[in-house]
Image (cartoon, rainbow, N blue to C red):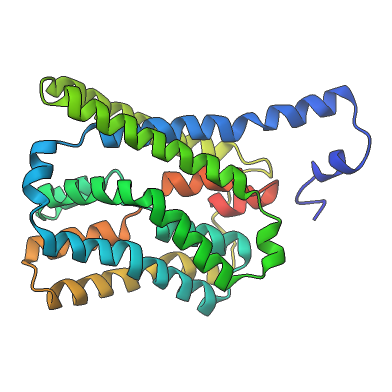
Length: 288
């Protein structure tokens, strides 16, 4: 443990002023990650076109099917994968956060490529982002308690995760307010917010890749269960999406949309959560 988390020694034994300053510098990482996360979600929320939103909100069957898949089916599938593959608590909790997160910022782009219902995708992304304020922590708390021992969960900094969720709430609220008040009169503003969100998302990926305290992220040389654990929720999610959307009688573009929204998650929330929840080399393992 000490080899993987050398900063542990600084907490257990007297440290010099230089060593203490290094520890204090490490505290900036969750702050910077939360800043990137705020502008990512803020940019996504600020691009919501409420005219499209009002039209698509009437498509109750497609929206309810998508929300069922995203917040009920996929988190449960993530839990099953964690139990079946017996992932350790670092990768397991990270996977639970990912499968409980709202749709990702680029799901709309994928829907446009696959000739899906783009307006439905935008609406579902907006709704899932709003609902994630309650559903994300609820699913993570429920399935992490079912998957892991209480002693392991009590050792994690859940308060820090709560801060990240509060950042998401603030970003959603302010982004939707800006879009509703100024977006209609200023398409350029919506475009600028979209670009800002993309830049923040890229910045978050780069920062979390180099920021872990325990060293660089290495995706090679891991146990086979790591790769299966990463892929299986996507495969199971796609199969469930195709089956349930077909049984619901959705048309083909709508089926593609709910499938993409189900399996393409906002990984920015999970990456920020790893910096908040884990220490040392565990950070690199979780983010990887």
